[in-house]
Length: 494
Image 1 (tube, rainbow, N blue to C red):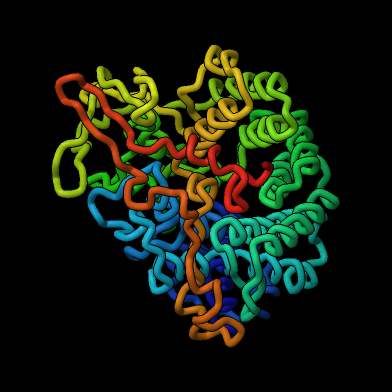
Image 2 (image 1 turned 90 degrees about the vertical axis):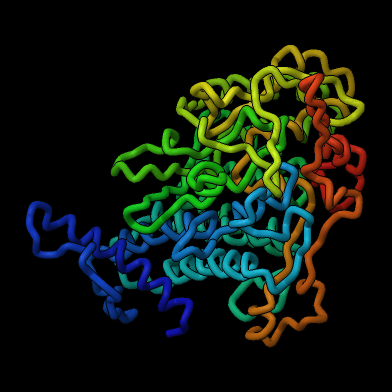
């Protein structure tokens, strides 16, 4: 059994023991919390009662690890680093990745290694479930097989979004993102064939078609998702008790320094993840992360409409989107102990009286910053500063497209999506180069990809006028994206 599968089995075994223990509720015959370093073989696991149910419990844990988790002070997901590698957040305390604020992408960065390992584990775990576990469990249902195809699709989707070139299977040659997306489409199609009408599978399919630049297919899937359930959200579940910590929450809210500080015009959305945002089922105070949600279908549909020249249709779609966003959960809590410091210790602007401009040419807007001496209320799934009046006033396609990317930035903040919209791709880690004979240091996959139109060292930069109480962002990246929409690196539907 290879090392990857052995580690996956060890993680999934804990889920298997939980399921097994449930049949002895009320007695102490088996307490899985007392199990330490269980030695388990593949055959042992497959002979457990209902192994597929246990395996899917492990898959739910693995998607959480792949997205965002910290174990033993080691980041194992990509979300915190992806947020740093964008204009959403600056790392002001250096507890997290110290290089990506300036888009220094070095294949020896541990962040890339752990992220690729966890996403690869997700893929391999799904494939093992579809073959070995399904064959061993005669009670496996079509819905369970569909879930495994979904997880496999998510692994390939994430790999294609984060790396411009990476292996699609264990030990394989690096392939371009387009091949990862093609595999993801096939996986999501399989999932929908086995369990038709699932909104989460349909949104994932629309997202993948968007990445491929297939406008018609992306639009069809997005419309189907909106018709089925516009308010849908699927979460990665975090649970401190079982060593599943929300790493982004730790960076935004959990540490005294609050390492990640938002771009001032996104201040009203921070921190998206806090103790008050957690379900607190076990009083573990770990917030869950929505990684599939209905808002994306509206954004994809509107982007396709704009690419087709349909401004009025996009305005209607974005107005409908606001209704979904306004209905999402919010959390009210105290954030008064956040020092709001820059790297080096100087104070960042804070207070609701500050005005913020998205660029030196943009107008100043109010309502984008919060007074943190009082209790604050922050969206925990989706939020936006965009209003229906602002959407109605749109006069041109590029202006609408710029506003759409602002909506994407605000709605997906904290979810690792902004880096992808900016066209930034990571390098395949050096550790993979050492063990994979099909990739060498000379391959393009060994280097990252940063569009040359991005202001790499100033993505988070802003100027403060203390007397006027104004903040001016140096670069409006949404405008820069639209100005470069012809690039193959960004705006895939254009």
